[in-house]
Length: 280
Image (tube, rainbow, N blue to C red; front, side):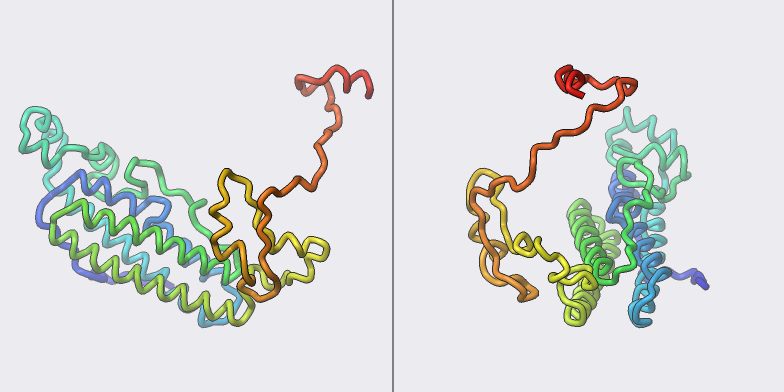
């Protein structure tokens, strides 16, 4: 069960309208790493969690908080659009003062949402459920969560420097602080799960199950010009799980065969090798 409170998690109060900034903020609302994505990602991970109850509870806590962040951003966008109108947009072409306010406005804020937030990114591309990760494997999912929070916080930090509006910046500072905590949270969960199950996902498929492929688990294949990558910790030393030593291969050779597919039916209208047809 969910219930809504009228009060926002944190105060949202802008100093002046700014439709261009409203458009830019759409990215952290409905973009790939926006609040809608982490909201849905954490909730679906929580809904489907079959592991320790503390992980499910945490996912539901943070997923529900993210619903509040979506509402905060919608309120922020609405305030930044206050005073915008189709007439003002037309006048912007003639009046530099109006143009400073109206320049770059997202037409859909006027035509579709009536001066409100949209479930889209900053270019108007609709939010996509394919953005979310909810695999059922806790360690894999927590790593995806850390990635999402890292990218989301990065985008909010960039937006922070795009405005001098102290009201907007105050809202962003709250979001940056919460995103920082959420990174801490996922790092703590990841460390706990790694200590419990090991660092490789899935732990239920152990290294020894790879049988004859074991050597390939420790080889770095240099497949681009230059060999600077040999200086990294991924090319020398012991693997994080302690099961083997890395090997740097400067000129790795192919280990497979040349593909030689069967001749397909002519009704498929391939450009076929006549020699293969004759030899068939």
